[in-house]
Image (cartoon, rainbow, N blue to C red; front, side, top):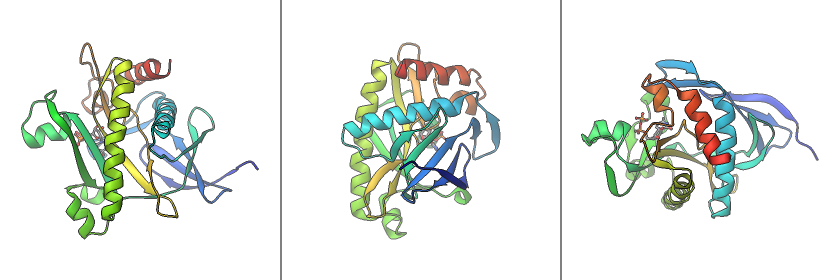
Length: 237
Ligand code: UDP
Protein backbone atom coordinates (compact mmCIF):
# COMPACT_ATOMS: atom_id res chain seq x y z
CA UNK A 1 0.00 0.00 0.00
CA UNK A 2 1.50 3.33 -0.97
CA UNK A 3 1.29 6.37 1.23
CA UNK A 4 -0.12 9.61 -0.16
CA UNK A 5 0.67 13.08 1.13
CA UNK A 6 -2.20 15.20 2.45
CA UNK A 7 -2.55 18.66 4.06
CA UNK A 8 0.20 20.66 5.75
CA UNK A 9 -0.08 20.28 9.53
CA UNK A 10 2.62 22.67 10.64
CA UNK A 11 5.19 25.06 9.26
CA UNK A 12 8.31 25.80 11.25
CA UNK A 13 11.35 27.93 10.57
CA UNK A 14 13.20 25.34 8.51
CA UNK A 15 10.67 22.60 7.80
CA UNK A 16 7.07 21.89 6.85
CA UNK A 17 5.19 18.84 8.14
CA UNK A 18 2.41 17.17 6.13
CA UNK A 19 -0.19 14.58 7.06
CA UNK A 20 -0.28 11.38 5.04
CA UNK A 21 -2.89 8.70 4.43
CA UNK A 22 -1.19 6.70 7.20
CA UNK A 23 -2.10 8.28 10.56
CA UNK A 24 1.15 7.01 12.11
CA UNK A 25 3.34 8.72 9.49
CA UNK A 26 3.98 12.33 8.50
CA UNK A 27 6.12 13.82 5.75
CA UNK A 28 8.79 16.40 6.52
CA UNK A 29 9.77 18.91 3.82
CA UNK A 30 13.12 20.66 4.35
CA UNK A 31 13.30 24.33 3.27
CA UNK A 32 16.32 26.55 2.61
CA UNK A 33 15.01 29.17 5.08
CA UNK A 34 17.30 29.99 7.99
CA UNK A 35 16.76 32.07 11.11
CA UNK A 36 19.14 33.07 13.86
CA UNK A 37 19.20 35.15 17.02
CA UNK A 38 15.72 34.06 18.12
CA UNK A 39 14.28 34.77 14.67
CA UNK A 40 15.74 38.28 14.37
CA UNK A 41 17.97 37.37 11.44
CA UNK A 42 16.20 35.75 8.48
CA UNK A 43 17.63 34.47 5.24
CA UNK A 44 18.17 31.42 3.10
CA UNK A 45 21.11 29.09 2.69
CA UNK A 46 21.24 27.69 -0.84
CA UNK A 47 20.27 24.00 -0.94
CA UNK A 48 20.44 23.72 2.86
CA UNK A 49 17.19 21.76 2.78
CA UNK A 50 18.76 19.10 0.59
CA UNK A 51 21.87 18.79 2.78
CA UNK A 52 19.91 18.64 6.03
CA UNK A 53 17.42 16.11 4.69
CA UNK A 54 20.03 13.73 3.29
CA UNK A 55 22.50 14.13 6.13
CA UNK A 56 19.95 13.76 8.90
CA UNK A 57 18.50 10.65 7.26
CA UNK A 58 21.92 9.03 6.80
CA UNK A 59 22.95 9.76 10.40
CA UNK A 60 19.64 8.54 11.83
CA UNK A 61 19.99 5.27 9.93
CA UNK A 62 23.48 4.79 11.40
CA UNK A 63 22.14 5.56 14.87
CA UNK A 64 19.35 2.99 14.44
CA UNK A 65 22.00 0.36 13.73
CA UNK A 66 23.78 1.40 16.94
CA UNK A 67 20.63 0.93 19.02
CA UNK A 68 19.14 4.43 19.10
CA UNK A 69 15.54 4.30 17.81
CA UNK A 70 14.65 7.20 15.49
CA UNK A 71 11.66 8.59 13.62
CA UNK A 72 13.20 7.86 10.19
CA UNK A 73 11.00 5.82 7.82
CA UNK A 74 11.86 6.60 4.19
CA UNK A 75 13.56 9.29 2.13
CA UNK A 76 11.22 10.21 -0.73
CA UNK A 77 13.41 12.70 -2.60
CA UNK A 78 16.03 15.43 -2.03
CA UNK A 79 13.86 17.41 0.37
CA UNK A 80 11.05 15.10 1.54
CA UNK A 81 11.14 12.29 4.09
CA UNK A 82 8.52 10.10 5.75
CA UNK A 83 8.92 9.92 9.52
CA UNK A 84 6.99 8.38 12.40
CA UNK A 85 4.47 10.77 13.89
CA UNK A 86 5.38 11.58 17.49
CA UNK A 87 4.44 13.93 20.30
CA UNK A 88 7.57 16.00 20.71
CA UNK A 89 8.94 16.08 24.28
CA UNK A 90 9.23 19.85 24.90
CA UNK A 91 12.92 19.71 25.77
CA UNK A 92 15.91 20.78 23.71
CA UNK A 93 18.60 18.32 24.66
CA UNK A 94 22.07 19.77 24.14
CA UNK A 95 25.35 17.87 24.35
CA UNK A 96 28.62 19.78 24.47
CA UNK A 97 32.13 18.41 23.99
CA UNK A 98 33.89 21.75 23.60
CA UNK A 99 32.93 25.23 24.87
CA UNK A 100 31.12 27.40 22.29
CA UNK A 101 28.12 29.66 21.74
CA UNK A 102 25.89 30.33 24.70
CA UNK A 103 27.96 28.15 27.00
CA UNK A 104 31.00 30.37 26.46
CA UNK A 105 28.97 33.53 27.03
CA UNK A 106 27.25 32.19 30.15
CA UNK A 107 30.32 30.61 31.72
CA UNK A 108 33.11 32.91 30.57
CA UNK A 109 35.00 29.97 29.06
CA UNK A 110 36.73 30.68 25.74
CA UNK A 111 35.27 29.03 22.63
CA UNK A 112 37.30 25.98 21.74
CA UNK A 113 38.08 24.92 25.32
CA UNK A 114 37.57 21.13 25.49
CA UNK A 115 35.75 19.62 28.47
CA UNK A 116 36.96 16.82 30.74
CA UNK A 117 33.73 15.04 29.94
CA UNK A 118 30.67 15.84 27.78
CA UNK A 119 27.96 18.10 29.21
CA UNK A 120 24.25 17.41 28.82
CA UNK A 121 21.84 20.29 29.29
CA UNK A 122 18.14 20.90 28.80
CA UNK A 123 16.18 23.88 27.55
CA UNK A 124 12.43 24.19 27.76
CA UNK A 125 11.23 24.23 24.13
CA UNK A 126 9.09 27.37 24.17
CA UNK A 127 9.57 30.16 21.61
CA UNK A 128 7.68 32.78 23.66
CA UNK A 129 10.08 32.22 26.56
CA UNK A 130 13.11 31.92 24.22
CA UNK A 131 13.83 28.30 25.18
CA UNK A 132 15.02 28.93 28.75
CA UNK A 133 17.79 26.83 30.28
CA UNK A 134 16.34 24.35 32.80
CA UNK A 135 17.48 21.29 34.74
CA UNK A 136 15.74 17.94 35.08
CA UNK A 137 13.93 19.02 38.27
CA UNK A 138 12.12 21.71 36.27
CA UNK A 139 11.19 19.10 33.67
CA UNK A 140 9.74 16.78 36.34
CA UNK A 141 8.00 19.57 38.30
CA UNK A 142 6.35 20.99 35.18
CA UNK A 143 5.52 17.48 33.90
CA UNK A 144 7.46 18.02 30.66
CA UNK A 145 8.77 14.44 30.93
CA UNK A 146 8.85 11.59 33.45
CA UNK A 147 11.99 10.41 35.26
CA UNK A 148 11.98 7.26 33.12
CA UNK A 149 11.76 9.34 29.96
CA UNK A 150 14.58 11.61 31.12
CA UNK A 151 16.74 8.56 31.88
CA UNK A 152 16.09 7.15 28.40
CA UNK A 153 16.70 10.51 26.71
CA UNK A 154 19.97 10.95 28.64
CA UNK A 155 21.21 7.48 27.70
CA UNK A 156 20.33 7.98 24.01
CA UNK A 157 21.83 11.49 23.90
CA UNK A 158 25.25 10.33 25.15
CA UNK A 159 25.09 7.35 22.78
CA UNK A 160 24.34 9.72 19.87
CA UNK A 161 27.38 11.76 20.90
CA UNK A 162 29.69 8.72 20.80
CA UNK A 163 28.36 7.49 17.44
CA UNK A 164 28.40 10.92 15.79
CA UNK A 165 31.85 11.84 17.10
CA UNK A 166 33.35 8.73 15.54
CA UNK A 167 31.57 9.19 12.19
CA UNK A 168 32.59 12.84 12.01
CA UNK A 169 36.19 12.32 13.02
CA UNK A 170 36.53 9.88 10.10
CA UNK A 171 35.48 12.84 7.93
CA UNK A 172 38.01 15.12 9.66
CA UNK A 173 35.29 17.03 11.49
CA UNK A 174 35.15 17.79 15.23
CA UNK A 175 31.74 17.60 16.89
CA UNK A 176 31.70 20.62 19.21
CA UNK A 177 28.08 20.51 20.39
CA UNK A 178 24.58 19.70 19.13
CA UNK A 179 20.90 19.80 19.96
CA UNK A 180 18.50 16.85 19.86
CA UNK A 181 14.75 16.52 20.19
CA UNK A 182 12.92 13.38 21.19
CA UNK A 183 9.34 12.25 20.63
CA UNK A 184 6.84 9.81 22.08
CA UNK A 185 5.12 7.18 19.96
CA UNK A 186 1.47 6.47 20.84
CA UNK A 187 2.61 3.57 23.08
CA UNK A 188 4.96 5.89 24.98
CA UNK A 189 8.21 4.70 23.41
CA UNK A 190 10.84 7.45 23.25
CA UNK A 191 12.55 7.89 19.86
CA UNK A 192 14.95 10.44 18.38
CA UNK A 193 13.10 12.98 16.20
CA UNK A 194 13.69 16.36 14.52
CA UNK A 195 17.02 16.55 12.64
CA UNK A 196 20.80 16.21 12.94
CA UNK A 197 22.42 18.72 10.59
CA UNK A 198 24.74 21.74 10.37
CA UNK A 199 21.70 23.73 11.57
CA UNK A 200 21.64 21.86 14.87
CA UNK A 201 25.29 20.89 15.39
CA UNK A 202 28.57 22.76 15.59
CA UNK A 203 31.07 21.16 13.23
CA UNK A 204 34.67 22.41 13.09
CA UNK A 205 37.24 21.25 10.56
CA UNK A 206 39.61 19.02 12.57
CA UNK A 207 42.71 20.43 10.88
CA UNK A 208 41.95 24.15 10.48
CA UNK A 209 39.19 24.74 13.03
CA UNK A 210 37.07 26.34 10.29
CA UNK A 211 33.34 26.50 11.05
CA UNK A 212 31.31 24.09 8.91
CA UNK A 213 27.87 24.91 10.31
CA UNK A 214 25.18 27.51 10.86
CA UNK A 215 27.49 29.76 12.90
CA UNK A 216 28.74 31.05 9.50
CA UNK A 217 25.21 32.39 8.94
CA UNK A 218 24.51 33.38 12.57
CA UNK A 219 27.72 35.41 12.76
CA UNK A 220 27.59 36.84 9.20
CA UNK A 221 30.87 35.14 8.32
CA UNK A 222 29.71 34.01 4.86
CA UNK A 223 30.36 30.79 2.95
CA UNK A 224 27.58 28.88 4.70
CA UNK A 225 26.11 27.27 1.56
CA UNK A 226 29.54 25.93 0.53
CA UNK A 227 30.23 24.71 4.07
CA UNK A 228 26.96 22.73 4.14
CA UNK A 229 27.90 21.15 0.78
CA UNK A 230 31.36 20.33 2.13
CA UNK A 231 29.92 18.52 5.16
CA UNK A 232 27.61 16.51 2.88
CA UNK A 233 30.49 15.69 0.52
CA UNK A 234 32.74 14.51 3.38
CA UNK A 235 30.07 12.40 5.07
CA UNK A 236 28.06 11.06 2.15
CA UNK A 237 30.67 11.12 -0.63
N1 UDP B 1 20.97 24.66 18.91
C1 UDP B 1 19.93 24.41 18.05
N2 UDP B 1 18.75 25.10 18.22
C2 UDP B 1 18.57 26.02 19.21
C3 UDP B 1 19.64 26.27 20.08
C4 UDP B 1 20.83 25.58 19.92
O1 UDP B 1 20.03 23.58 17.16
O2 UDP B 1 17.47 26.59 19.30
C5 UDP B 1 22.24 23.94 18.75
C6 UDP B 1 23.35 24.82 18.21
O3 UDP B 1 23.45 24.70 16.80
C7 UDP B 1 24.57 24.27 18.88
C8 UDP B 1 24.07 23.68 20.19
O4 UDP B 1 22.67 23.51 20.02
O5 UDP B 1 25.13 23.23 18.09
C9 UDP B 1 24.36 24.54 21.40
O6 UDP B 1 23.88 25.84 21.17
P1 UDP B 1 24.05 27.01 22.25
O7 UDP B 1 23.27 26.67 23.46
O8 UDP B 1 25.49 27.32 22.40
O9 UDP B 1 23.27 28.21 21.61
P2 UDP B 1 23.63 29.10 20.33
O10 UDP B 1 24.90 29.83 20.71
O11 UDP B 1 23.77 28.17 19.18
O12 UDP B 1 22.43 30.00 20.22
